[in-house]
Length: 109
Image (cartoon, rainbow, N blue to C red; front, side):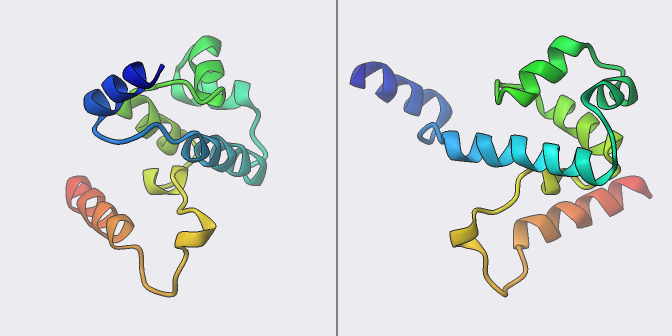
């Protein structure tokens, strides 16, 4: 098992973090709730299958393209799908999120 984990770390470049996946799914659930959308509404807005939404909500691997489609369907920035863990919250602005927003603004011009 340890050997398999070491191989996975080498392939991905960082250890597997199930807590990050849980935050990712929780963020999508929160955004769906705030927008009064169902998972079916999300699938329709994305033009995605129920299987894709099911995989997404189970924390399975999905493509960056799919995540961008989720963000577009939820009318939010993709960075909102990856909230920082509570222990990482500070009063300092999230530089990665700020940079991503800048890139998105430039791309829309």
